[in-house]
Length: 271
Image 1 (tube, rainbow, N blue to C red):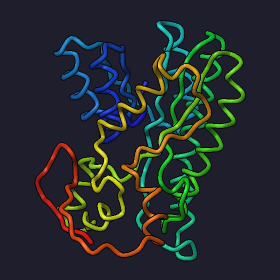
Image 2: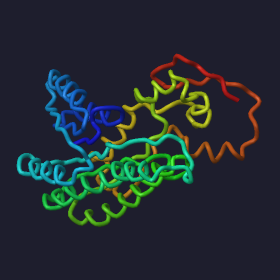
Image 3: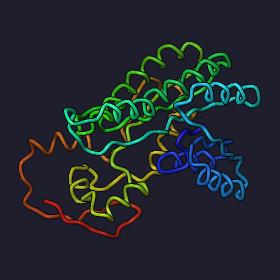
Image 4: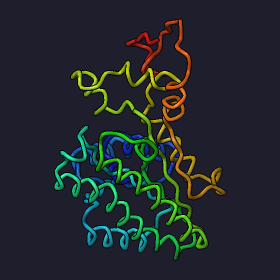
């Protein structure tokens, strides 16, 4: 099951699992988009269905988890549902915004992890993936969002320790700047300067949503059977390069870089 599976990284994750013949559930509040994706995947002989699910609704999550495990069960839960925050100062942030972001990003993952985790433990197997961020590791001017993502790291570690003896693995991914449709829209509107993002990436490009899906699939697969309790950055080297570049000597050359290894258009030049 993928929460937030009707868009962005969640959608890419659904498509990856469906492509390798996993039965998938898209759990989201965007019914129109979720149903459309599910229908498209079913037309390609994939077993995919959409379920309306608000991750802030504890009763609905418990009811849905009970339904899933009374039928076929679930081998993987991907907590991709979440909301962003515009740049702001902590001292200027509205507490209403803080409450809403933590309610969706943190409490939502606690509720789904609790409901599915205990049932996976009873079944003796399962994998849970939480969605951290670059803000898990570095300070960003998105105080509520950053706090929610930092807390998800601790949640991942606690769940991994608690559920591991019952055969359930819990990990997280930390996506870097990813070329989701929402990010592309912000670039087109001039709200995000892609050259600034790319210049701080060791690989000199954005991350593709499908690359996050691949990392999530790996962590859920038998190839990662010995891995639990980690947060895996999938960021094109953004975390390491931001620290390195602040102390590195200035470069004398200008090199062409691209936003994506799959989309060589829109070349930028950075020092």
